[in-house]
Length: 388
Ligand SMILES: Cc1cc2nc3c(=O)[nH]c(=O)nc-3n(C[C@H](O)[C@H](O)[C@H](O)COP(=O)(O)OP(=O)(O)OC[C@H]3O[C@@H](n4cnc5c(N)ncnc54)[C@H](O)[C@@H]3O)c2cc1C
Image (cartoon, rainbow, N blue to C red; front, side):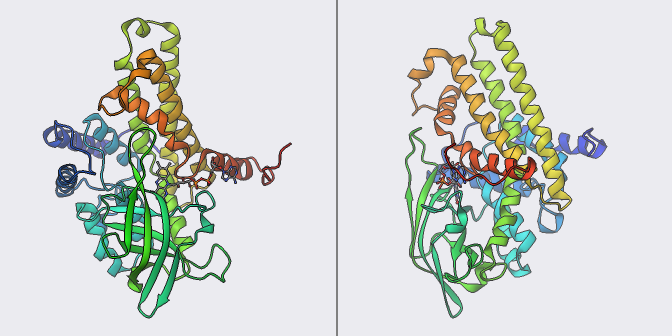
């Protein structure tokens, strides 16, 4: 893949930059968990859609621009450069939409895709359950086929954005006799329908980014099955393929965080050779990560499974997240201990991220990624977790 910008890419970069300079809101939006914030975010996403910028990586026939990995990276770089609002419908744009494009029927595509782009319908991902996280195939939420409907009972946990989402793409067990990876169905569930209850989880960093979901006798039309009944594992692997390729945004985000940290540093530290070396190392790691992700995205675009390569990217990204925020907190110094977690300022975000440690857990924990790399890249035997 050639990483030099050609004329078309430069033109696209200028278009995005100009548009964002004119249109990106100057004021920070209220949180999307409030009515005001939700309305602001939705309106912004709609504006992006009208400008043809909602999902540049989606194929043109589905409302995207069919952009390649490098152009998608250009878009995210410009987006962060403009300090534009966090994307509200990330799971719709990055996971659910691409899965529908790959596996959905034309009816399903026309039912849901456009509303993802316009943000009329916000999506969340109902995969994890208590007892089914890393070992997702042990999920127990039941789906019983009754005529043209599937009746869902069970519990999901750690469901991000579910407080304001409209739809859930979920995995349910529809055949309890089949081997674990079969008998699972990928289902689109209306979050507002009777029997769906959302209970927010309060985190130690004072945020409430996710919730538990409870399903009691929730009736879902069979037409909401993506792929075939009992073939949901295969569909879920398509979703995870897209999840693992979605790190470019993170590389740009890391760059911005590092810049913010440099901004927070006391003047004396800025001149310290040790600190400068550390900044240089972090900067190089971020750039290395960015190119690693471009390679993964380029494999996905050529319809090759990124495989263990994606695990290396994910591991790098999650560990980087922690190192970066640890560095930031050291730069803030003892003031870090006095940070008010309720406030909304850059140093607070450092503390929140550092306490959150989320990146080492979601989208496959660091231990799971190391297992994959050990087995599939290094050819080591499967681990037994036995003490040695
Ligand atoms: C911020 C955040 C957002 C999330 N959002 C969503 C969401 O929107 N939708 C959703 O469905 N889920 C979501 N999750 C859940 C996430 O996918 C799970 O937390 C993750 O898969 C780990 O599962 P678990 O929490 O059950 O931990 P477990 O799987 O129980 O793991 C516990 C610990 O054991 C380790 N471990 C487990 N198995 C092995 C093994 N074989 N070898 C070595 N170590 C092992 C793990 O690495 C971990 O340290 C989110 C999680 C976070 C943190």
